[in-house]
Length: 271
Image (cartoon, rainbow, N blue to C red; front, side, top):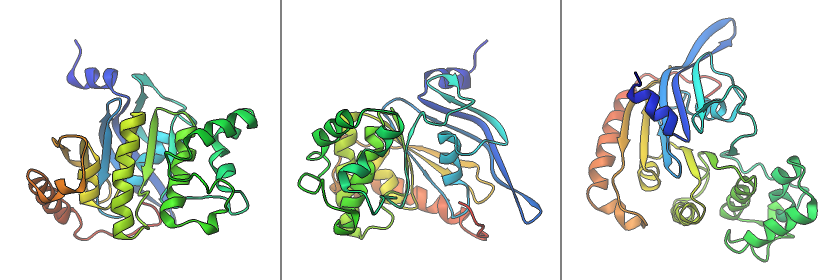
């Protein structure tokens, strides 16, 4: 007899069931994630929010295969993923562009790792430069770019890997408010064009709601799913939606729940 959990795992692009993670730090075993159930369907944007130190980035590292869970199971495309490394694209908060490489050469890194011929890789990247707002800057070095342009270059690098799943760890966290809003709308335009499955970690409740189909709220450490909120807002979206119902009600619900979880959080050298 199948259960709802079994059906969800089979149909999801990403599914985690009972995921836990512990770290040993200064002789102590510290739980970071505890019994996390999480899923993202194909083509969805799903956000994770929660207090600092609750394991949000650790969750992304587990999906990416950079960390092994202490317990629980990860599935990708309905198949248990024992070695998920290399199966998803990953964009960190910092753009991590190499200062000695041009914008074009930075975007090619993932393709080079995959062994794609340089001529073919360059052709793929150049085809997308205009769509990513980088046309005319292909031969510039990172120091010459604005923060938003650097993030576009990092995102293009992730898209060029060809992976169906993209993990974004606070990609706009370092940007000013105006640039951040512009980048959010730009990201939705690209999502509409490429229809990748996106898992986004953010501290910004408004950003999570604006971008997502669903939002997971994690508790204080050890991170558990306290709330999973379906975001029933029409697409395409512009920032006008943040001033209207039901966005305002969603935001109040998440802020109230987040406020309860943020009390008494102790920082540790991971998130």
